[in-house]
Amino acid sequence: MFRLIVRPLVYLFALAIFLSNLTASPALAADAKKPNVLFIAVDDLNDWINVMGGSPTPIKTPNFDRLAARGMLFTNAQCAAPACNPSRAALMTGLRPSSTGVYHNDQPWRPAMPKAVTLSQHFMSQGYTALGAGKIFHGGFDDDASWNDYFKKGGDPKPKVASVSGLKKGHFDWGPVDANDEDMNDYRVVSWCIEQLQKPREKPLFLACGIFRPHLPWYVPQKYFDMYPLAKIRVPNVPAGDLKDVPAAGVKIARPEGDHAAVTQNDQWKQAVQGYLASITFADAQLGRLLEALDKSPAKDNTIIVLWGDHGWHLGEKEHWRKFTLWEEAARVPMMIVAPGVTKAGAKCDKPVNLIDLYPTLIELCSLDARQELEGVSIVPLLKDAEAKWDRPSLTTHGRSNHALRSEQWRYIRYADGSEELYDHDSDPNEWKNLAGDSQYSAVKADLAKWLPQKNVPDAPKRGGGGEEDTPKKKGKNKAKE
Image 1 (cartoon, rainbow, N blue to C red):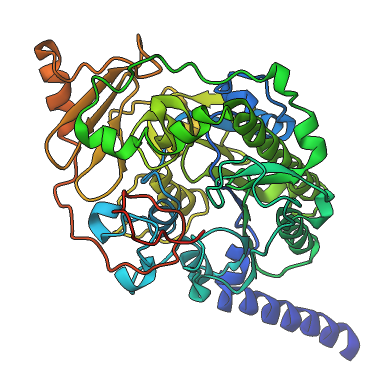
Image 2: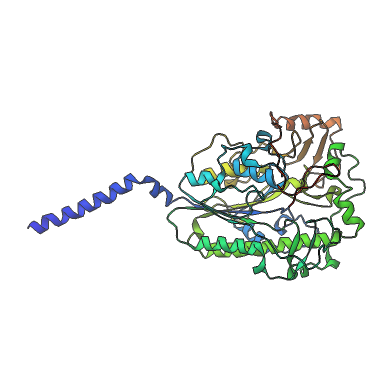
């Protein structure tokens, strides 16, 4: 009889302890339900991936395409700044360049905003393990406080000749390397990320993977160049005199006498395009490895995937190369989100969104505490319904008081000196005709101008070695190293 009474009491006591532990540790119970985040950055990637249709030469990007097919592709996403450092700093802090003074590549972002809580830091504060690899912040400006662990970007093999392109312009170069994928830095970065996906974890994971190509120099294995024979390369259509209706401030940024003159005078346009295409397809192969690893991991069905390019890239359009402009080629970026239970497979959204919107969006998707200082807005309503009401244009800033606003139809640019550009994307998707001087569009400009920043803080302190030159320099001055 005694055993019959005691045994149920023991069971009840054990059950009470179990329930009390759950009550005492609600964070653990909540964490078990939180989604993981795979956060993929691809450097200098413009809209030339196949699913976005920007390349004049057919391109092979099966893995970018299949990722887009799994969730939502934003066809009108814009960067906060058309340069690596300010774009990434804005995305990771949720603060615009006009609010921080980080406008260019040679301005360390952390000293300019020492109290900023980065996206990955916020995830860490909410019970996540935050890991990163490759290039997430701009080179030389990494932030140890933002990660539990980080695998830094390394170097790549170089061609046997000093300058494959023949231009002798430093890292503005391209050509095949005598190496395998396994010898490349991006392969090693992705391999490290794959290892992290395979490890069992008690906490939800925020994993950032920064793929460096197609950033210059375009050095990738020969097989990727072989996919794009020069005879089949088509270069962008650039009408003669395209800069005639562009104000002096825009022409100064374009610098047609620089890279574009060097490329065309040395008959290297097709070769340069070949190098960019080869580098994109190499990056696509690394993306494929990462996606396959995720699909084989226990986290497959509970992971949000976000892919973004930090800015676009010119390949001769507007007689310009690289980024560093306020036109469509430099401001528009690939952005894809796969959110289980929220996004639909193969969805596309044409609304103008911005990379700075990713921070508040992930907060909402992962049910994290809100942050009031963030200047972007959550795009979760668009993830649920691509046609949801969206009446705000997307802002891109290049240098103090130089801004572009992109709506569904228009791109409006206003430079610091007050000069303007206006392009109607319904009739002029290549931005060949500047309508800013036509009085019939005054109301359009005024409506867009309401969204310009109310403050444009002074430049943050600069430091050499922060990356490519993104502002015109006087002769004799040293360029920042890549």
